[in-house]
Image 1 (cartoon, each protein chain N blue to C red):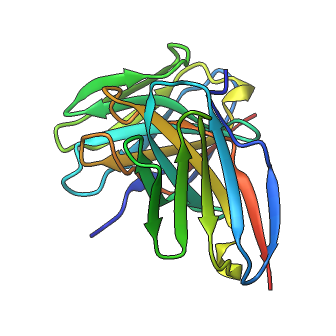
Image 2: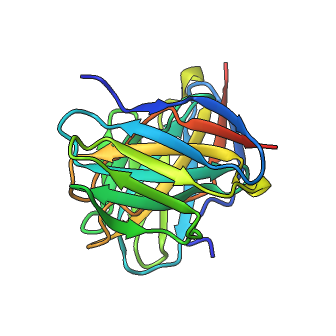
Image 3: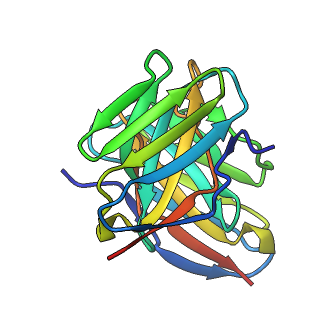
Length: 112
Length: 113
């Protein structure tokens, strides 16, 4: 079956702009999680959505937000971009309970 | 506060030998652990998991050991192959936190032919 699909794969923004990233999970998966990967920091948990509800939230400022649609597709938004937001943003889906995460290839955001 | 730590940024091993990747955690509530492999320009790929009710789990060439008292887990790859060269991440979560995983910073493994 098709894997996790993230769009766009690469994007460049300037400080102060906003960005929206999209994630389509594996068919049948109801949980979508978002992670930020920066050099030296590993993967940092942003938030998790399950059945259109935010189930968990990491320690990120309110500029980072997300949502999940009835078809389980998810979007995350970053407003008022800062240089430090440059990172690889990874989406992962799972069937719901705590378990294996299936990751997409990520969206690489560069903020100039 | 890094709750999951991988203190070795890199590791080089000869082909055919054993690779041992280590991971330490600080939160005693963690009870489920995963290992992922990541190639450049790709998303992480799941390798193996272990829950706190076990101290060992095997899957082919991959074995994960968990030492709860030491808050330490390790991934053994035997025998190592050049295709195993990648960055390896360990991750941990606690019951009732859904899929909120804490990841280490990764260990870059190079298997030398």
